[in-house]
Length: 298
Image (cartoon, rainbow, N blue to C red; front, side, top):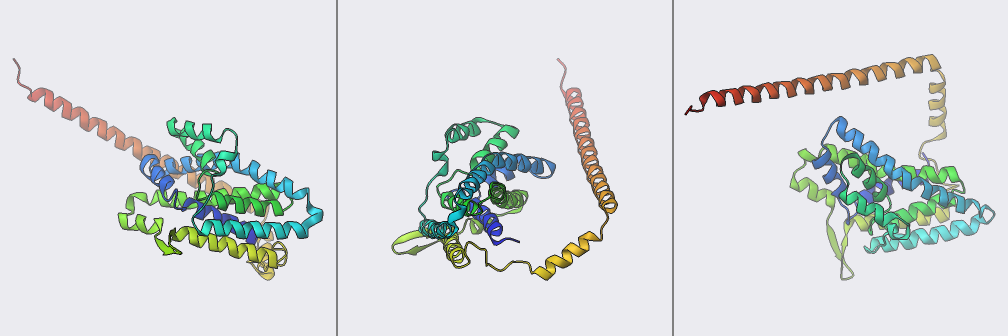
């Protein structure tokens, strides 16, 4: 796996857990949306809304980087400096809200506050990827990495992975929300420590330190070109050989079987829920009839 893509994913995770928005979105999904297929649907809608904004930003950054491919050495140096500066800003708990620089972002944020249902989820996704003072430096760092790719497509992919880094923990925390006690939620928010006379959130310090390290590694590896792969070449070769042994017919059969299993599970859940609703309706009807018979007649 590419170190830059992994950094983008981790950046998304840390943006979701940033001090300004720690557990706000998981709390909304866990208490309002619920669990099961409804949570899956809303998480998907949230991610689609996020991609609508993040992918164009990534493609724009990739386009900008592609215009200056002849000056790669300078780009790597400038990007490394920007990453380190953003890391220092993040470490000390400072930040900026990228949404203020985008036209229409404030209006979309206002609409998300008054909307309901799937529309609210979609608008939350569209604004959550770019909004937040604490997560502003993180998004700036990911956009900087996207620009150094020098590719419109790879820039969009990097921002899509950044969004996935936010959605995956959001989905997991929301699914477990009802089982989490106050202590667990407090631990996930993270604490703070006093440094240089300032009260600094631990999450911001960890994120800032990671960004500084990435900036240094980015410069030392010529924009991650000479960075070692997280998966060895031999492992990749074995994986490619293993997948080549599977025929397309076998894959088609597996996909069909998987879809059939999913359909059966969804049908079973639907029938069970409908049966429960019918039993509840019958119980309420019998209760009302009993109450009517017990009332004294005048």
